[in-house]
Structure formats: C-alpha cells, structure tokens
Length: 437
Ligand code: NAD
Image 1 (cartoon, protein in one colour):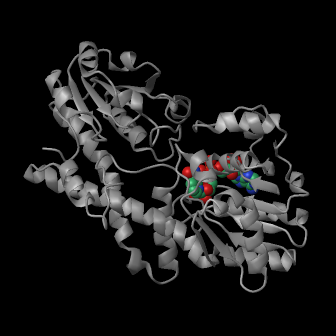
Image 2 (image 1 turned 135 degrees about the vertical axis):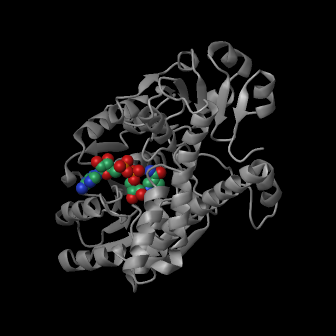
C-alpha cells in the first residue's frame, strides 16, 4: 500500500520504516527539516534499537522517502497522524496544536476514499471533532483512530509484531472500508493472529490513555509500598514477588524505584485527568493525581537519600549519575527521572558527573550546567556517592570490586533496585535500594 506518515519523531519515524519493512511504500513528512534530512541520509535522529538497520534497508529498496513538503503525500491512500501531543505549558491538558496543524496541512492533498488514521495519543473526543472537520472540508475522506502501544527500546518489534491492534472506526458504511484498509496495512500481524479490537473512536482513544493510566498506577502503587516497606524495614522486591505471583496482579511493572518518566506516561495521565474534569467526571480519575504525586516524590526521595548518605553535606561532593534517559535502550530524556535527580543534586551544590550510553547529547543541550562523560570509569573516578538511575545493561553488569577501586567513597544508591546488593555489599559498598531493608 502507499502510506504517508505525518510526524517523524520517535513514533512516526519508527512507524514509517516498520511499514516499509512490511512491504508498503511509505512517505514520511515532518516540519523539522533537520530531522527529514537526517532520515533521508539514513541517519536516525534518535536512538532506538533496530531502526537504523531497517531505515537503511528501506532506503536502499526505495520503499521509504522523507519530506518537509506535505504535497509528498499525494498518491498515498492511508495517512497516519503521528505528530506530538505534549503537555500544554501552564496546564495539565494536552496541546493539540500539532494535530490541528497537520490535519489542516493535509486536507488540500486528500482525495475522496482516502483514510486518515490517528496514531497520536489524544484526549477522548478529538477523533470525533476531526472527523467532523474532514467531512466538512473534504467529503469522502474517512478517519480511523488506531492508538499506538509501542514501547521505546523495543519499538520496531512492537510495531511489526504488536500484542494487539485497536481500530477505532467511523460509524456507518465507512467502517467496513476503513477496516479493510487497516487490515491491508497490518496484514502480517493480522494473519499471524494478533488480536484486533474493533471499536468506535472514543473507545479507541480511551484505550490508550487507560492503558497508560493503569501502568502508571501499578508503578506508583509499588512505590507507595516501598515507602511503607522502608518505615517497617520490609523488602519491597520480595513483596512484589509475593503479590506478583498472583496471576490477577502479575509481576511486571511492579519494580519499585525512581518512578516513571518519558514522553508518554506523565503527560498522558495529566491530560486524562484534565479531560475527565472537562467532561464533568474528574472525580472518577482523581486517583491519578495521587499516582502522579507519588511518582514525582520518588525523585525527591532519591535525592534526599543521597544527601542523607553523605551526612547532609552535599556541597561540592562528587556524585556519579549512572543513566540519563528515562529508560534503558532509549536516548529519550523527556521528563526523565534520572535527569531530574541529576539536576536536583547539581542544584544542591553537588559536583555531578553523569554517564549514559546514548542520551548525553540531548541532556547536554537541555542542561549544560551538568558534567557529562561517555566513560563509566571517568564518572566513578573520585565519586563520594554513586546513583544508578537508569538500568542500562552496562550499569547493571558493573563489577562492584572494580567500581569500588575508582570511587572515593563506596556509597551506591540503586534507584532501580537492579543490582545484586549482596555482591555490592561484599565488595565493600554501602548499598541502598528503594524500599529494601
Ligand atoms: P516526537 O516529539 O518525538 O515527534 C513528533 C514529531 O511531529 C516531531 O518530529 C515534530 O517535528 C513533528 N510535527 C509537529 N508538528 C507537525 C506538523 N504540523 N506536521 C508534521 N510534523 C509535525 O513525539 P513522539 O514521541 O513521536 O509522539 C508522537 C505521538 O505519539 C504523541 O501523541 C505520543 O503521545 C504518541 N505516542 C508516542 C509513543 C512513544 O513511545 N514515543 C508511544 C505511543 C504513542
């Protein structure tokens, strides 16, 4: 199929190259000229495993091209909207300016029978409003909402082999046509038996924010348990095992630590709350405010722990920060707990040296006041305290004896509970995890 993807960020660029990998003919459009020129040159403007390989294959096969000119969508039958929906400044709500602008730019190039497919995460009701706009300004064009559930770090695999696909279809006869287009786009996954949930716009939109709200709640729940565990000298990792063996609960997303971040969960739960309030049912999701507050508090708790372990004297103490991205295998620093901890410690006067395998260039642009290194040994060298904030494999596999030989004081805060604390203690470290006795 001939497909266009509007917005070539973390979601759109991955979607474009994954669709090309599946055999479609794809054009990606973005307003960011630098991003487009990088993609056309075979360079991925962010770090995500596998994207570089399938991008270069798709370019070599002539299956994908990128442009800043929206007219490049001409000839495509299906147009995916993958632009950003960040949090609005001074508000909890989502900013839909990019969605509105992208649709406005697209409209003159649409033909009757085309299908516009929303992938961006939007407040419930957005699709119905866009469908009304399309029907007024370009009759015969259909809209579907097809939320994206990919996880950064495994985005290519999640796009090519998703664990489910959701189609939010238009009412009436268009539903069948739109579904046939989407079945063609996702033919491989559909043939492989991937569950397809077919529903209306509003359920499709809600399914994305509900999924993120649930995941965020699970993390904040276990972090709340971690706070209690610390007070009563219990071990939250054992607690998570004990409750996670219950199939109704499950062990995934029950890892206590510095909390969630990134370009999705934090802004999505805030936008969900704001939208529910607009709809007059804010009370029903008011618990998400507690989920958010617990999450933000985790970062402060890690900072406080570092300060306490240094006897309250943080000024000019050298602190090694292991990790900057919001999760491993990604360079995404949007609302990253790791970066937040580094910045807070720096603000308290610590001499912060941060190391990360992929996120340094982004972090440097946003927080030039920090010191960065690509070398773990350099970060550890002479440190009074070490904080593991993003569980990159290169950090979780560190040899504690080697690391102890580099630091000034062997104090480690394992803010992801991912180290073998026995091994670290045996190597002479003062080890502190989150919610662990
Ligand atoms: P991003 O900021 O990385 O990318 C957005 C892109 O849209 C940017 O490249 C920007 O230049 C481009 N853009 C903005 N206005 C445009 C316009 N008018 N025309 C063309 N391009 C335009 O954001 P992202 O992480 O890719 O997220 C995009 C959407 O997907 C968001 O709604 C997000 O919530 C959702 N989502 C993201 C992920 C993820 O893991 N990143 C997963 C699922 C859903």
